[in-house]
Image (cartoon, rainbow, N blue to C red; front, side, top):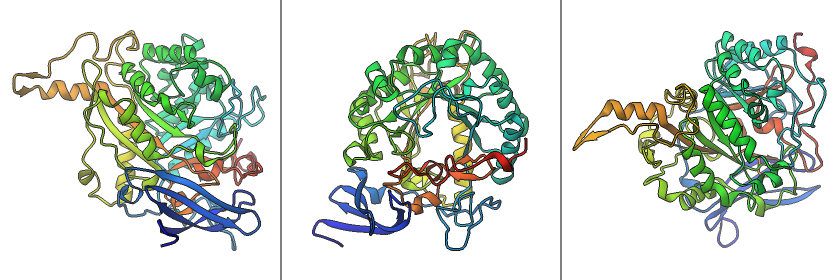
Length: 477
C-alpha cells in the first residue's frame, strides 16, 4: 500500500517520455481509478490514467498461458533488451494474430491526428516495390502462419497496384486481407470497390470518427461525412464488408459513441461491426498528452451502454483471448429484424476456461475473419447499404414456442455484428509487460515484426524507437 486510499497493484517497467530510457513504474489504484506512475531522475514524474471506473481493473482478466514464437527476427543485444530489440525477440509472449504491411507513405489527407505522421502528397520515395511486399508476405508466413493481414500506410488506395498486392497475398496463402483506409478513393471511383473484392479483399477497415462533420473538422481537418457514406455504399454494391474504426478523443467525439453504434447497426449487413480506438499520443496528435484527454476501456464500455442502451437488452463485453487483458474488449451480436442487437457473446466463465495461449490466438484469427468478412446478404446483387436492417423480407424465427434454428443461424451468418475496442499504448502509459503480450505487429521495411505500440512510440520531443529508423537496403528488390 502507498498513501491513504492508494493501493499499489504491481510494479512494472516503462519508458521515460523524454529520453526513452527504461525506468521503473507502479500501477496504482485510487478509488475506482488506476494510474501508471513513474519517475525519471533527469526529466520528472508522471501519473497517467490507465483505467477509470467499472468494470474494475483487477476483475478484467482472462487467464492465458504465454506462448513464445518459434521464428524470431529480433536479436537481443547485450545491455539492451525489451523494448529496444523487437523483431520479435525471445522475450515476446505471443504469436502475431494480425500483421500490418505499410505499402505507401503517401496520403490524400493531412489529419491533425495520425499515428504514422504521414506527410501529404509525398512522392513515391518510401513506397516499396511489389517484390519487397512479396518478401514481407513470406516473412509473415514463416513466423506467424496465415494470420490476418492489414494493408496500411499512408493511404494504401493511392497505389495503382493495390489490387495486385491483395491478389499476391491471397496467392501466398492469406485468406483474410483488409485495407486500412480513409475511404476517399473508394467513394470517388465507382469501380474501385469491385476491383478490390475481385482481387480477394475481405474487408474495408474504414476510418470513421463520428456522424457529425464537426468531428471530422477537428480530427481530420475537413468535413468527410459525405465521403464516408459514399464509400460504404460503394462497398455494399460490391459485396465488401466494412468495419467502422473511430479514433476516440475525449470531449471531441466521445459523446457521439452511441450515435456511431446506432449508425453502424443501421448500415448492417454491409457494416460488420465497429472497432473503437482511444486516441494514443504517438505520431501526430494536436495537443499535449494531458491526462484529461485520455479515454479508457471501461469508459468506452459505459458510453456504449449509456448512449445506446435501448438497442440491446444485453451487452456482455469480454476481455481478449489473445493479447494482454487490459488492451481490449469485444462483444458479438446479431442484428435482428427491426434493428435491435441480440448478444451472442459467451459468458465470462465459458470463454475463460481454456488457458492455452496458442489456441486462443487461433480462435481470435478465425473469429475476426468470420465476423468481419461479408455475410451472404451483403453479397447479394446491388449490395445492402440502402436496405433497412433486416433485409427486404423479415424471416420468421419461430412458430409459437418452436424456434426455426436454421433461420436463426442464417441470420447470424448474414447479420453478425461485432463491437470492439483496442487501447494502444504510448510512451506515457507504456507497460512493457503488456507490450510483450502484443499480437498486432507491423512489418518493418527490413523484414522484422515489431509490436504495433513499440513501432509507433514517439517521445515528447518527437524521437522514435522504430518508425522512420529503418531502410529497405536489406529487403530484396
